[in-house]
Each structure stands twice: as structure tokens, then as C-alpha cells.
Length: 222
Image (cartoon, rainbow, N blue to C red):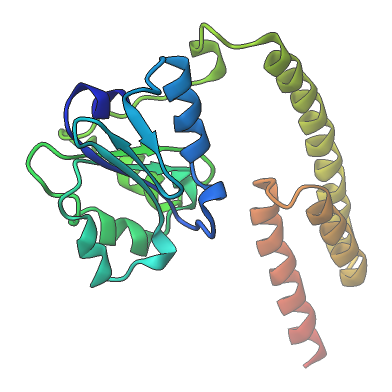
């Protein structure tokens, strides 16, 4: 928003999936316009924001683009991908060569999730790109981190620790069941662990072990 205020620029704010303007960062930008008292400079429309200097901010979902219609973004100066951990490899490969105007920039903001996510592989999976600036930012880097979020964070950490502990107990029970050849019991323990926290990384290895146990059980029957 400040870049568009400083000089004429066209910016597109992107999410992998955006079914309506309400799912975009439009409201966040509107709030910032108010915070910096720039309401007289920007005109806020239903689907875009325009600046008096000719700047334009639009909001799009990558799911609506293909190799042909994405060319409409070629003249943009900035593409900001919010929640980039959800960006597919196909979307990343479409977007990168499209934002190619001299001096143009691609911005990605995301909460790291899996090393296999396309944005993580691109920026953090290999040699550092000389044309990229990668900054890891956490809550303790925010000098304005409010007490209400600090309390919520601490509560979430306690709940997360409880979930992780319970998942670990169930995966131990699963492995004990596999050792006893009780595949049904192993399934129940794994399914309960998945129900508690389907995103727990310990489930990945457990899933492999359970599949191997099923394969061994089938081979024994044959």
C-alpha cells in the first residue's frame, strides 16, 4: 500500500484459492489505509483499490488462472502471495515468469508448514537465491505484539503439548499392537491419533509402519 502511495504501481494480492473478495487481504489493506490516514488518496471499490497517482491494487485467486489468462498480470509491478504455504507448484510455475516487468517484485508471506510445500522448496529447499531476500519472522520479532495474542499463544502451546503427548501415546500403542499382530488394534490407535491432530508430523512415519504391517499380514494369509 505504501509502495503504491509513493509512486504509481500496479499490485496484485494473490491467494491460491479465493472464492470471494471477502477471502482476500482487501480488508487488511483498507485498515492500513485508515491507520496511515491515506483515505483521501485511495479510492476503495468493491474489487480493487485505486490511487490518485494511477496506482492499482487488485485481488485474485490462482485457481482462476491458466497459462493463457494469467498473461493479464504481465504488466504488474508487485505480486503478493498471502498464505503462500497453500500455493501449488503449478501456480508457482505460472506466476514466476508472468511478473517480469523491469523492477517488478514477487512477495510471499507464509507460515512454514511442510518442507514439501512448493514455496518452501523454492526458497528454502536448496542453495540460497541471490535475487531473493528470505526473512524468518516470529512473534518475538514484533515489538507491537499485543498481550491478548501472547495469552492466546501460551494457551495454544499448552494445548499443542497435550495433543502431541496424546498422539505419542497412541502411536506407541499402535506399534505395540503391530508387535502383537493385532492389526485391528493398530488401526484403531492410529485413527484416534489422526483424529486428535491430523497434522502431527509423527503420523507420517507411523502411517508407513502401519501400511507395512498390513502388507505383512496380507502376505501371511496368502
